[in-house]
Length: 286
Ligand code: NAP
Image (tube, rainbow, N blue to C red; front, top):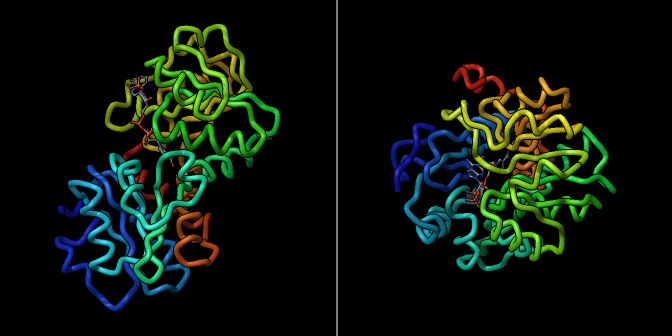
C-alpha cells in the first residue's frame, strides 16, 4: 500500500480519534476526492479525515478497511468491479451496474453501493429533463454502465456507442437498450451526448473521443471528465453551438451521495463544488 501526495505517509499516520474515510485506487495521486470530502467534513463539524491510498489489489483495500476500522471508502479504478466479491452485501443497483464506488462499514459489515449513476442523473436533471430524452453514452466501461442504469431509471433513453463495438453491444444487452458502433454516430440524433471515456482528460488534453464536426447535431454535450473543466470535446461542442457541461457537477453529486451513505447527514454540496474548483484553479487544471 502506498499513500498518495493527498495522504499521510503511512497507514499508521492515519490513526487518530476521529472517523476515518478513504479512497482506494491505483493511481490516486490525481484525485480531488480528499479535497472535496475533507472540506465537507470540516463544514459539517465532523471529526473526520479522508485520505487517498494507492493499493495493489482489492483484497488489500478491504483488509485495510476492516483492520483500521475505516468507516467509509470511495473505490476507483481499477477496483470498482473486483471489490464486489469481497463485500458482505452489495446494494441492488450497484450489483446491476456491476461496479461499486462506495463502501459503508457498519460495525465491521461492509456494504457496497454505486453513486456514479445517481450523481450523474442528479446533476443532469438540473440542466435538462431526462424522461423521454435520448442520450448517447460514449464509452462502455464502468461509468457508462452506471450512466445507462441511472438514465433508464430516470425514464431516459440511452444509446451506447463505443470504440469496441462488442463492448457496446454487451452493455446494451445487459440493460436492454440500443447501441451503435462508433462510425455510425454521424447518423444518430440525440438530445444529449455524454462522454464516458477518459479521452481528453488531464494531462492528455489535446485528445478528444469524437471529431468536432460531428457534434453540432447534439443540443447538449456533457463530458464526465472534470479536469480540465473544459475539455477539447466541450470546446469544440461549444463552437458547434451545443450547450455544454463538465463532469464537475457529477463528481460533486456522487461524492455528496457517498457522504450521505456514510453519515446519514446531508453534505454542503455548494461548498464541495467550490473546494474542487479552487483546487482545479490552483493546478491550472482548466
Ligand atoms: P473504463 O472502465 O476504463 O472505460 C473506458 C471506456 O472508454 C471504454 O469503453 C473505452 O473503449 C473507452 N475509451 C478509452 N479511451 C478511448 C479513446 N481514446 N477513444 C474512444 N474511446 C475510448 O473507465 P470508466 O471508469 O468507465 O471512466 C470513464 C471516464 O469517466 C473517465 O474519464 C473517468 O474519470 C470518468 N468518470 C467521471 C466521474 C465523475 O464523477 N465526473 C465518475 C466516474 C467516471 P474500449 O471499450 O474500446 O476500450
